[in-house]
Image (cartoon, rainbow, N blue to C red; front, side, top):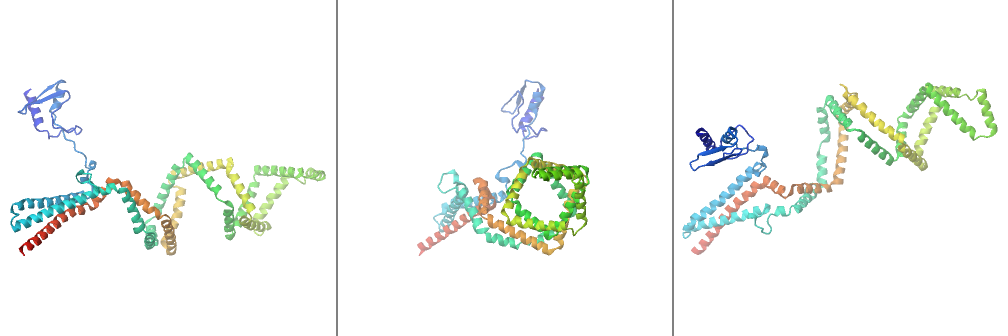
Length: 501
């Protein structure tokens, strides 16, 4: 039992010793679970353990004081600039206390001229230091917590301060003219050239693969349906007649209409070689003949029936003639049907821009087509198929889609590196667009800055100002003490000189 008392006494007298367990709460008392400790005036400790030796060993164990990690400190001492503010605050307080000490030391000698001079200097310094302390403190908070009017200026007026700061920066500093001038000074062409030189085709392919993978992962079933719905809404709101007219004009100017006719003719001719397509075309011809006969008189019907009976109106022969005619058009570049197709394209282009009735019919057909359930289902299937194809392609060791896009981007990069005129053109275009955005949304600059200041809150604004200008504000107190002392000495000197004269 004596060994237990001695060990517990050492643990009691040395609470600063650290244990191996870092999870115990900090304490300077010798405690244990269900154990009571009593200490005499001589420092002896007796422990009665109710749970045997385990509780006694716990009572012997010294407690380790927990220390917070450095990152957990959120006080002002851990903020940037706080050390400089504390140093200046201590300096100002030291100068003020020195002035007060000088006043106390000079008070017994106030009857002499030098004692009176020192006392006047010290008293005026104390008054000046206290006045500047009050002024500096009143900017951020209430001095001594007293409800003095016109104190805590920033917390009391921080809403108006945010508005005034935003208005000042937006209206007097970042004016539209100044921002546009700064944008014009930027050499976008040089930036494009240097940026293009630093990028390689491998970087472009890696970036393309990453962006494509992200897009494919984001394109879920719900997202695809939403995109299809937005696309349909966009197509519905966009007039299609001017777009078709512009597309036809571009096709005619570049000679693409002949290529389109060639592709359509070859496609139809190849399709007519398939038996199922030939059967479908024959059924369409039968339906057309039936509709044609329904609107004719008795004798024309008899002649058509006789022609069918004699084999003149054979569906297979009509399909074969259509197939041979398409092949002839495809082989002959000067076929009259080609010239007629070009004339039809030119006429359609003109009518789409001048004929309002035709444009209205085109719009109605477009809206009816987009509202068809089959078209909606087709667009959904296309989106899902695109996602599956893209994911399968990106899963391959070498993605064809990523390589294709990267190759086009590489061509654009090489053009930026070698073509100075292109860089200047792109730079001028970017400057013009950015300048337009600045002029259009310049009013939001003041709002943006005001919201940023308002988001800091009164405490955040005070902390921000103290961190960046607190050392200078504290030095004002030093200047107040020094200037006040000099002013007091000068006044005392003038007073003494007047008495001597």
